[in-house]
Amino acid sequence: MLVLLLASNFSFAQTCSDCRYVSPIFDSVTVTTVKFGEGERANGNMQELYMDIYEPYGDTATNRPVAIFAFGGAFVTGGRDDWYVVLVCNFLARAGYVVASIDYRIYDDAGELATEVASGLLTGVPYHMRIFFRPMQDMRAAVQYLKADYAELGNNYNIDTSRILLGGASSGAITALMVAYCDKESELAELGAGNISPINALGGFNSTTGMFPNYNWNTLGVFQVSGAILNPDWIEPGDIPVISAHGDDDDIVPYKAGAFAGLTLGFFNMYGSYLVDSAARAKGLCSYIYTMEGKNHPSEDFGIEYIKSVVYRLMLRMDAVINGRSFCCPLDVTVTADDTVRYNPTLGAFDVTATVANDNGNAQIKWCGTPCLTSGVSSSISVQPDTALYYLVCIAQEGACQDATLNMMKADSTLVSAGSVIKTQAGEFTMFPHPTANAFFLNLEKDIAGIKELEIYDLTGRLVLTQSIESNTKSARIDVKNLDAGNYIVKLSAQNKNFQPQKLFIAR
Image 1 (cartoon, rainbow, N blue to C red):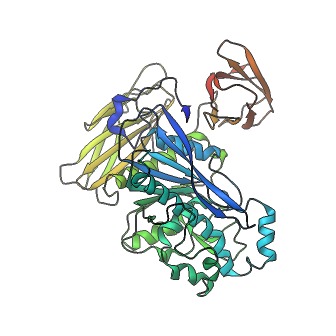
Image 2 (image 1 turned 180 degrees about the vertical axis):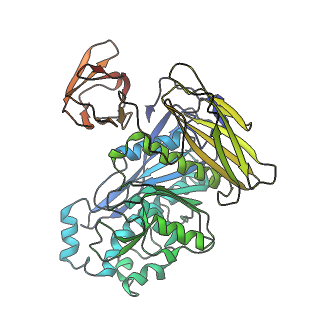
């Protein structure tokens, strides 16, 4: 079992225990890798399927909800250990979820694609259904494994199988939506004018690649980033709720409708998160969409802080779902700050007040800082962040109804609106994934002129790695595979400017 150290201390944040599932109340996570299935690849070879199971380190809770997360990559690339997958899974696990980052079969070998093309299996619409169906089988198998572990294998992860959420990014998000809403053979068959034979060749519509085929793959909800579905009419009354985020300038997976710039070769139109949300609402489903204004398909260029803000927004709605509440109701909470008290880097505070509308007079307020250094239940709270950028969550609950806001606080203003673009301060840098095993990306949100010099020191003060970073470069890959596992200090300088040193943990 690999322990990933995400902070300098390992204790459970008792101060914010009421903020579970909306704030990172744990300092670190553990990761266990298990096999959950096996499936035949396009080239005829068998692929063993694994999941990395993230758990909050030191957690004593039982009956914990599960978030399944599938990587993106246009069904031709990617893996469960991609940097952003590790990032998202860590966020969720530190908030108290058990998180499963899963494998699914992709066309990662040009020979596989050539094999199916040459055999005629990828000729025409019906056969392209195989591209989407293999990952569906694999995600179904992941759900079955978790349910079997609970029922037969001793519930090794202390989970509640009635509270499993499907999630993913890009092609992983497409897969989650397909598993959730393409639940009839006739729906998939309609893409091929009734021809279901390509799916029958893979075991039939109701097949999976799992080791426990007697379990269903029913789940409680979907959370997805930059995904799409092949037909929004597959979303029907009574289906599970959906929580989405999507850039309205996405040229890979359409925000509304259009071609998918992946492996579909133009045979299908895809219907993105905007139309998924519209269809869900029209059918009476609870649905939320966060539109990432002006954003293209997710990439490392987004910056780690922006990605965190998106994940936190999704988590606020996921919290409602796993606790049996609706985030689609008249309840409305807004947050205002007292401009007479301003935060500054040395001394200051935000005096923040929540106002609830459309309630029946019994709404309960809950505040949670992210990171969780602050919590409270009164209508107002005074917050003293210890960083230049701080997130404050406000949740209002009344009966089965829940509304929430995510508010960003910065050193140069009192309160940043939820839709604002987040920028790190000049002089700061981020590293991801962190912790890392072999390499990490160093990211600067602002251009810093001149050649930058990166140095890594061990805890004895010995310089163990030096790397020059080209002028006007905002991101660089740093290879640390030759360094031993453990703690290090990363220093960065540019011309006459020194950046704030940061801790690095290498875990293997």
